[in-house]
Length: 83
Image (cartoon, rainbow, N blue to C red):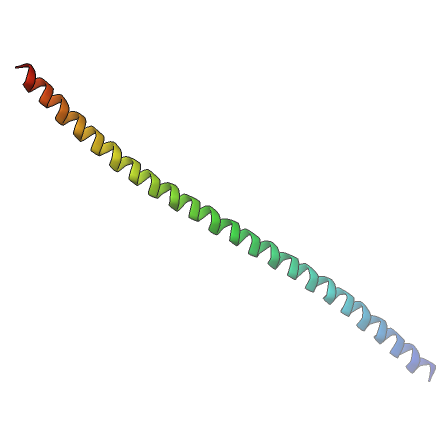
């Protein structure tokens, strides 16, 4: 009878230890998931910033090309006016 009680106590202790380890692992998994979610959100925000900067660059290049075209036309008109 004592052997059975000792075996049951040992099994209970083993179960408790396994449960503690499972709880610890679950907490670590939740923390890892939170960090991953935060990293994904930050990455999405950075990607959006890059997209906005690229769009701004395109607009700036278009304005620059327009200004260069107008400058070339004005220079040509000035040269013709000198003649």
